[in-house]
Length: 77
Image: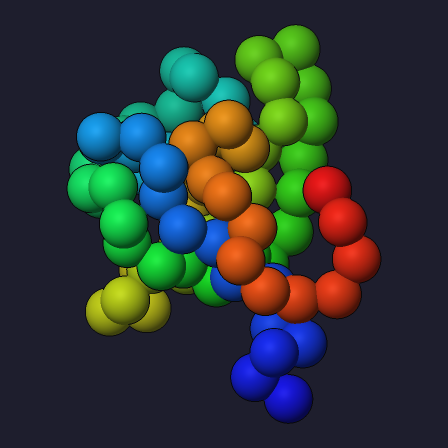
């Protein structure tokens, strides 16, 4: 089961976790490179492709796809 859960690792020095999938949404928190997240959903709009993620502590928000490297789960990006 665990390997089928979509997970990713932050690959930029600081990634902003936003309240919605857009640059103009509020920043909830910044997370550092190397943090593992659970990927919940994907959304693409004019500001790029965003992944809805849950970070340790169960905070859920949106990060830009380019800030992540998928490390487990089914399918490809």
